[in-house]
Image (cartoon, rainbow, N blue to C red; front, top):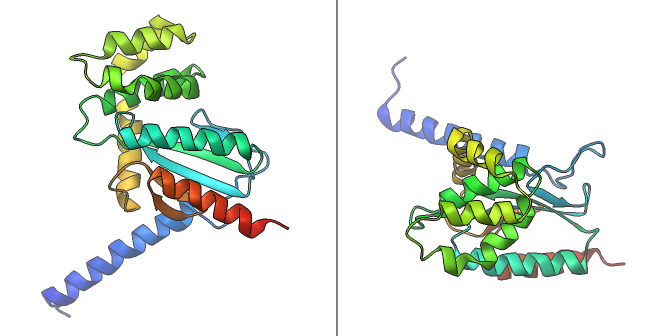
Length: 209
């Protein structure tokens, strides 16, 4: 049986929508809770099994992401046992050094220094964003945090981290991410740091006895 072009186009569209919904269902079950036996990954922090599960897509050269990082820290200080967060890379094309920053961050993560490097990257964002080249700056920053410089250089220049960052971008695109910061809070998409904070407060207020 010959299928007309409009019908074929409709079937393809339905398949694409189904694939996206399946991916969302897999990644963001409600509640999105890891196995009690699971361990925190290098880009995760908080309590495994916490009532609030957050996935953040960020760009290290994005000013709004820097402000959001402060909000996230405040929420963790207030509710240390209530939140679990996993960070994903989503460097935007408009930011010349965002992808390079993500590569260094992932290499720092290989040595257990992701969150320390993450914090310093955002704190010094205004400085390195204006540079002509960032490699020396990022290397010195990482070493000052206790990262082994030789291993860092081999990691950064090895090319293996590119695939991880690309995978995060593809995953984000499939979920409808188009700007940063974008959060998924218990599966609900929240764009912007202010919205993230408001959603956390709303969930905690709702669940309060």
